[in-house]
Length: 314
Image (cartoon, rainbow, N blue to C red):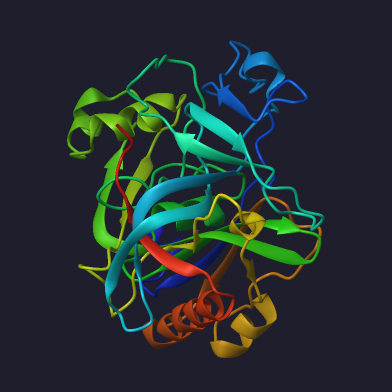
């Protein structure tokens, strides 16, 4: 079936569900710090990890220098705490204790993916480090051709909301606004991957981790400086304070209010049983902008900061 029969040229809002648990790792009971190695992939394809690290992907609270946009639209710098996917090595430090469920138990300092690297790790996708946010593979090959093709054919100005379900709540970690810069590539094709003009860090962290993936689309997110239709990619973050457990809070997106803010051919999902997969909402540019503004309003109202850039760790 031709691609045009699957997808029209309207922008899309994709609610993207991925595993939301906090990364666990072996550590002595009274230890306050721990080095967490790369998450390995076994030869049988099962992601059982190093030293009984939990299987598959998970989220970490990362603390890193970054840039965010303040309420006046001015770019600011600071040490930020944010939830993200990162499967390379980190140094973890215990967070102050909290009786509130869902707050981070550990904060992570990320290490360069070029140090102590190897070939059989799990890929990080999306990636919020480097000059732009990047999305390359995840769920582009899920069962159901309409869904997987949608994620390979996103038009500029579309939004992918990467997050996780916790009971009836949607924990949002990345707002990815699709830029006009996208490329087709095939895993293992050095010519295809080389044409993407990506850093060595990103290749080591993500592209070199893919296994047997064909016909992928590599997307870059819009930046604050090169926004599409006045909207840009960001991740909800807190200003970091090592004595404040609230830095480890997850941002909860109110899906009901978001659905009320824009019109689409279907609403975003509030199904408490939906743990993985995608919800596809096709609409027009005006409604995408309305949805993005509502997300940003909720982020600011809950005292989070829209972080737009993080340099690679050295």
